[in-house]
Image (tube, rainbow, N blue to C red; front, side, top):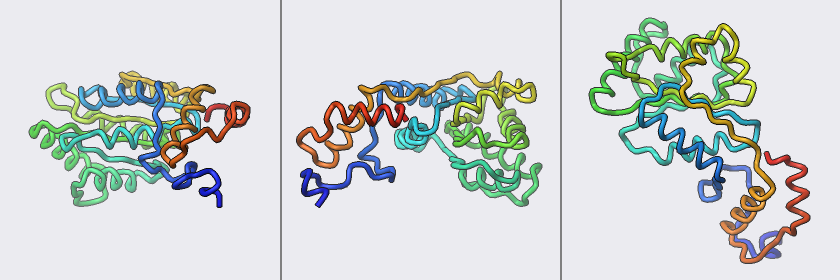
Length: 229
C-alpha cells in the first residue's frame, strides 16, 4: 500500500547500504578526493572525522569501489579487539599467512608482504573504522606498523575514520608522534538544510518517485530533528 500510494518501485529509506541509494554531497566528494590522494600518493596517515551519522562509513565504501587491483586494502570495521585478534584481522584482510600469533612473527611477515607489494608497484592501504574505539595498546601497534619503510619510502597507507573525540585521543601526549604522522585531516560536518533536501529527493528518485512527496515544511522538520546527521 505504501509503495502504491506514492507510486514508488521500492522502499526509499531502508537502513541497508544499497549502493544505488548512496548520495554524496559536496563535502563528501571533497573528502573522497583527499582519501584517494592519500592512498595513491603514499601520504602515510589520513584522518577523517565526523559525528555519528555524517556518512563516514558510506564514504569509505564509495572509496573502495573506486580502487583498482593495484591498491590492496584491508578494512577493520570495529577495532575493539585484543592485540592478537587485531593482527589476525589485518593479516586476513591483506590475505597473507602468519605462522604464529606472536607480534614478532607478524612484523616479519607483514614487512615481507609490504616490500613485495612495493616491488610489484602496488599500494597497500589499511582502513580503520571507529578509530575512536582503539585502545592505547592498538594505537601504539598501528604506529609501529607504520614504521616499516623501504629507503624512507612509505609502504603502508593508513586511514583513520572516527568520531570527533578521536582528535582528543591523538592529541594526548602519549600519541604526539602518531599525530605528527597525520598528513591529511578532514572533518565532515553535518548536512545543511539544502543538502538534506537533496539527499531526500535523491533517494525518492532512485526509488521511482516522479513527483514531490515531502513539503518544504516537512523537510524543515526533518532537518530540525536530525540536526543534519
